[in-house]
Each structure stands twice: as C-alpha cells, then as structure tokens.
Length: 431
Image 1 (spheres, rainbow, N blue to C red):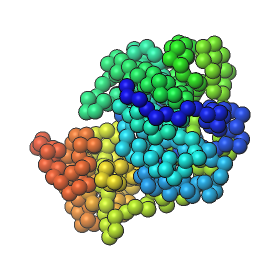
Image 2: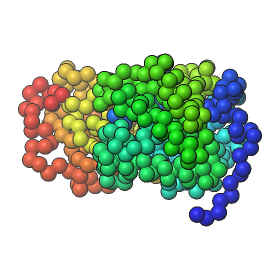
Image 3: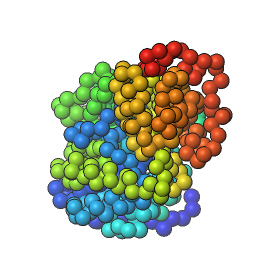
Image 4: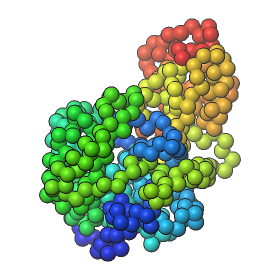
C-alpha cells in the first residue's frame, strides 16, 4: 500500500460526530447528501419505493442530487442549521455503487466546507478500490453494514449481490460480500479512519449471531457497533418478520457489548436526514432539496431524461402496463444518475391513463420497458414520448438512451414481445 497523507484523528473528530458520541447529539447535527441512488445488492428487507417525510428509515429520500447540487444544498442547510458538524452520504443506494458521484461530492464538500467532518455509510462490497481515495479526501468516519460474519447467514440476508455485471445469490453472495466487508474494515482502520459497524437485527435470521459479529469486528479494531431493529417492509422477502422489541434489542446489545462498544441512540435516519438527531428537519428541508435537484438542467433541453420500467431496479424487465412506478434517469457530469422515482397513473381509464402518464413523464424523451401494447405506444408517441421495448441491465442501456446512441443490441428478439399479448381494444394495454 502506498503511503498516504492522512491527518491524525483529533479530539474534535472524536467528539463532534453525534452518531459516534451520544453526549453531543443535542448540539451537533448531521446532513445526509442523497447523491448515491444505485445499489449493488438487494437486501431481503429493503424496499426503497416509498417516500414519506414522516417516515425515518434508511433507503428513502425526497430527491437525488448531483455533486454540484449537493454542494449548493449544503450551503442552504448551513444557513438554516449552523449546528451541522457532519456531512454524510448514506444512499439512498450504496455510495460506492455510485463512486464517481460520491467521490466528486466529497471533493466539493471538503473544498468548500473544510470545517465539516465527513462520514460515509456503505455495505462495503465496492469500497476496497476506493480506500486510498476516501482517506486522501479526508473522510473521518465510515459505517460498514455487516449483517453476518458467517457466509451462510449473510447469503440469507440478500436476494442478490452484484459485482460488476455478475450477479451472485445464496452462499456465493454471502462469501463475496463478507470478504469485501472484511477487506473494507481492515483497510479503513489501516488508514486511521473511525469505523462503526451497523447490523440490522433480523429475527430468526441473524439475531442469534449478533454477539459473534461484535466479537469478530472488535478483533478488527472497529470502534462502535450499532444494532438496528428490522423495519418490516411490505412486499419484501422479510416483510413477514416481526420488528424486534426494545427489550429484545437491549438484551442483544448487552451480549454484543461484551465485545464492542454499542451505539444506543440511532434514529434509523433517512438518506436525506438533516438536523439534530432528536430534531430532524428533513420535512422542513424537503422543498429546498427538491429545488436543488432541479438546478442543472441543460440549457434549452426540455426532455433531458429517460424513464425505466423495472421490477427491482437492476434490469429493464417490466411491461409498460404493469409498471406502478418509473425510474427517471438523466446525465450529470456526463454520467447517468437516477433523478427520482415517479408513480404511474392508476390502472384503468383507457386512453386517459396514457395521457396521464405522458404528463407524468413530460420531461422524458423515452421510456424503456420489457413490453408494451401498440395503442399505449402510439398514444405516448403523440405526446413526444418514445416507447423503447428492450431488455437487459439498466446501467448498460443508459449511455445509449441518454446519449443518443442505438438501443438495437438490447431490443427484444422474441416475436410478439412488443405487446401482442393484448389486442389493445380498451386502449389499456396489459395494465
């Protein structure tokens, strides 16, 4: 490992982060900058489809920012809440599945707001290649989510783990992500960075394993351990599991605390959390966040985006008529970025439904979907929205879709895949 110019941790670094020091949570605040929409894993408890300003849990945000937008938003946050001492990136996906956006945001924040501590939360899968970069950018605190130190248990936590273009499941997924997490933790500690490990407590899955996680992480020099009770999300594989009670969490913390110091004041913060831990101002700042997310539209461009129909956020694999929401993607700094997710109009209503969808996607030039009926495609085309029937990884298609390239390599080759399943007599398609 090459030598790094790492500033030693100061007393201020140790005490001014409210998540790492409970004593300052009433006077030191944090802001999460939502610049990382894509994720490289799908946890069996995760559902990022819902955004409610009254709901505080990881993976949800009111808008996604580009790096320059995040710097502007940071200015406005500090004007309204000068007690902010920490700028963090915690999603709504994984920061290092969005490495370009994450690193550029870090650079801008460090350049413009050198007084702030910088904190990043990751699953650790894609962090190792960027360990030197985060140290050189002055990141002081990192959180790595480790839900198991047994590959079999880890494999049960994730529906899939994606490394590059290869998707792993089950035991293979567990082995891969655990190896990367261990490499990440060791690399961070070798670079003098304060490390917290988060563990989502999943009844019947890993709750019996929590103390072992603490023991292994303590041996690697981790500074703090945070047990987060499962937030059951409808529609997920673990949606049926009960939320652990406060008493159950206390018992687990006592056992884990035999090995590693425990965090006891976590608020399960959103990816756009802002303010003091006990006085979150995400709702108040939501309008400002949304306004900042619209700052950098190209001059004169009225349709800079494309919409995507996807089941899980990784593939274009959903019929236009079946989609209940659409991801909206654009370009920032030459790289594709998820701008936001928009709800589709309710099923029914014939042609009026597609008129409503055209209005919802009025700033999109195309919608990518796995199949579509001929009448919906025709109606949307009349409103300037091209329906592109294709299949494959979203990340692979976006450069062509947003840059004016050809989608021919991704076009479906099966006869009738473009919507022959429905005669379209109702004008509704298969929705």
